[in-house]
Image 1: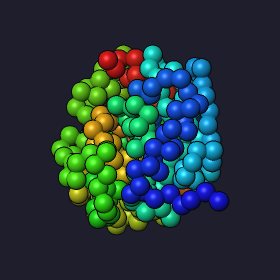
Image 2: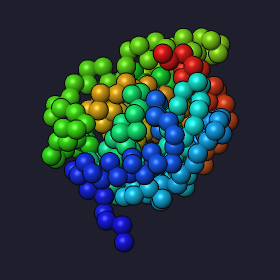
Image 3: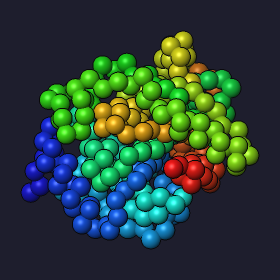
Image 4: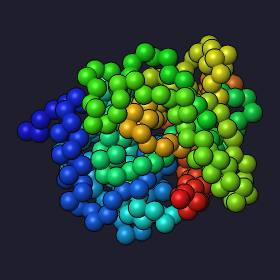
Length: 279
């Protein structure tokens, strides 16, 4: 039986990275974590090598049916990439330190840049389903942190700075990429809620007052870990619905999948163009 993953054991990350490195013949430049219904980007990867999470030593398991649960390695936008088709969430029963696993593995594989994506509810009344929002900052008020517990100095300092969590030069690069593609890119602050239930209208009103433009159940742990690891970060939210209280429609996972499928191409175009423009 495989030993339970210990998020405070550096060797647990190293063994996973060593296994993956044995399956590929290049160093990863960019890691990409794909949100719900955004896995279609994997189809654009050339020379693709697909490795299910279940084959990787001590790798966590995905339980959301919208997440395949596999690594896809190859070339995209002229870069050596590692895509995670399927992410992990605290609502699946994982504690926050366990959620550090995927980004730390990417770091050990060589990734210096992380692109995170997600499906999110639109809190900003100007946002419409199908919009893409460039994440400029994030809010997480839950108190828990993926960096809690003993610090692993191999990855970073005890108290990392997150003043510029989403790398300014990558924000500008994404804006330029959107101009190249001739489409309008929204911008805003991503607000984390633990889920798995959707938010109440009262919670959405509070989130708006606190400065949130979109709300979702992922991403923040990954970006905090990336900052700890010294990685540059670019974040993109697909607005799949208007948040509770802003529409008369009931919220459902089916709506997330439907909008993700309809808007998948422009998301894929944007990510690929961003990769092409990265130095």
